[in-house]
Amino acid sequence: MADLKLTGARKSFGPIDVLHGIDLAVRDGEFVVFVGPSGCGKSTLLRVIAGLETVTSGEIHIDGARVTHLPASERGLAMVFQSYALYPHMSVRRNMAFALENMGLRPAEIESRVARAATMLRLTDYLDRKPKALSGGQRQRVAIGRAIVRDPKIFLFDEPLSNLDAELRVATRKELAALHAEIGGTMIYVTHDQVEAMTLADRIVVLNAGRIAQVGTPLELYNHPSNVFVAGFIGSPRMNLLPAMVAADDGTLRLGIGDREIALPRPASGLAEGQSVTLGIRPEHVEIAPDAGMLGVSVDLVEQLGGESFVSATAPGLPEITLRQHGQSRLRRGDVIAISFTPDHLHLFDATGAALAGPDRPGA
Ligand code: ADP
Ligand code: MG
Image 1 (spheres, helix red, strand yellow):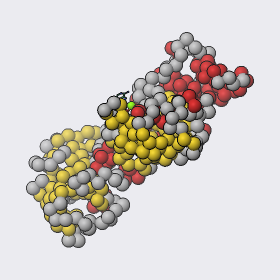
Image 2: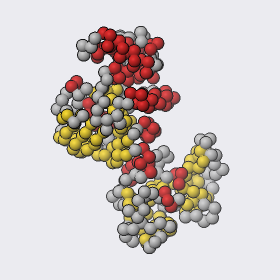
Image 3: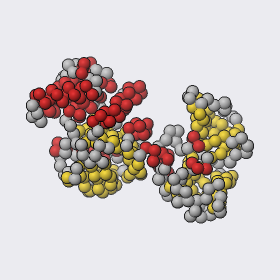
Image 4: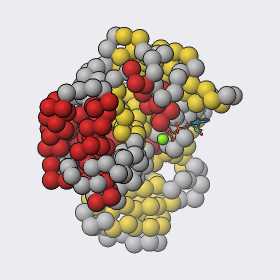
């Protein structure tokens, strides 16, 4: 187990800058998830930590020791990839033991480490099988077992569940959470799947185009996104983001949205009349108003999931607005409804996308 520190880590491939200066501290025993859209640099960042790529500039420390220029084999880390990369001709047992044999460990020590990992991963009955006689989920557990037996300072995972079908992905995700609780190792986990990020992480690092957009616990990011990128990325269905103009900020915030004006009973000081802002409101905080409401919209689509419903609605000049309803919706396509936004749950972002005021930032 170990902590990790990145300082100003940059990575370029020729003329292409992929990481633009990453500062990050991961605590001993922490489960940190890197999340972000495809191509934002998640794998590159993980590979830089692993020592599979060298940083163009910046420093990396593991447990206080500078490892910036150490090769991967001397960093004491273990990486699990999306493709299991098992040796097909070796049994499960030997797949797990192989690296330990190369490290020169005593046979009894190897045997006990493999047995312990196999128990944790429910692979004991499969130790003499070849990988091709295993399911996808079992193969990925072998790959994880291979990392565990090495007792690494830090576990690195690059989208390890992406090749599994939906049901197995959920089951293996829960096993990983249990594994972390059991062995308590420092784990860094890359995914583009925000459900994995939300459920596994102690802290999430949201990456956008090679920069950290925000670091925080899952609910900190959900409740208090510090910019419009994180607001739109975390949460499904995504947060509604409506372009708006400050009409007045005189105790009541009045916002021009499309050709309408809505009044919000919450001031946000520091807003100038005429300023362009983005108003953010999550689907569960859009309410159907009994009377005129704030905005009139027309229902385009009702998605019934049984336990909840997602309603997409539009109004001329506005982006689509999604509402989340508890239970089963009575709405139908073509219905015209009035909606209101729960004022306590409004987010405001300035023209650069930075959060101006949100649920946690009254008048900030
Ligand atoms: P992610 O894992 O978030 O999808 P990557 O870290 O794989 O993103 O890639 C980030 C960017 O770096 C992409 O534009 C990718 O094409 C580029 N990239 C990654 N590895 C290399 C490489 N070896 N040579 C050139 N470009 C690369
Ligand atoms: Mg990747």
